[in-house]
Every structure is written in structure tokens, then in C-alpha cells.
Image 1 (cartoon, rainbow, N blue to C red):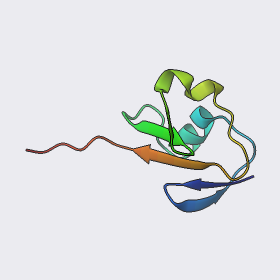
Image 2 (cartoon, rainbow, N blue to C red):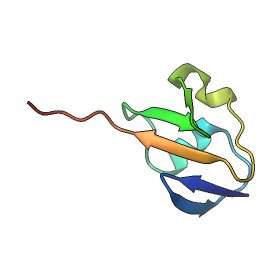
Image 3 (cartoon, rainbow, N blue to C red):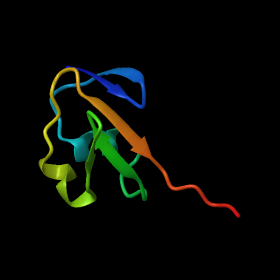
Image 4 (cartoon, rainbow, N blue to C red):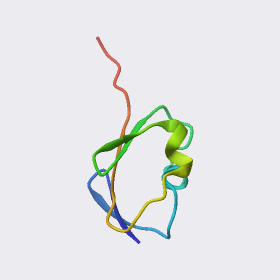
Length: 65
């Protein structure tokens, strides 16, 4: 299955969004996620099955003053 993760192509077997985040090292991080431009809350990531061609965005909060 081919996906785009933060604009970069990625080949992966069928997975949920939560599985993908764990595999890519985001597991446990405070992040925001979107699939095809739609926000996916943390509580819904385990149920969000990804499909071929999906575009996933992962955003981390910024700190500063």
C-alpha cells in the first residue's frame, strides 16, 4: 500500500493510523494527525484504517515565546 506521510512517499502493509504512527516512531508523542486533510483525534487513531493513496499529516506542537 502506498501512502504519503508528511509529503514523503511510504510503502506499508495495510495498517491503522495508530499502527503507522507507532512504526514511524510517533507512538506516545503529543501530536496532531490528519488523513486526507481531515483531523483525526488521538482517540480515533486505532480505528482509522488507512487506504492506498491516503495522505497523512503529523504535526507536533511548537514551543517558544
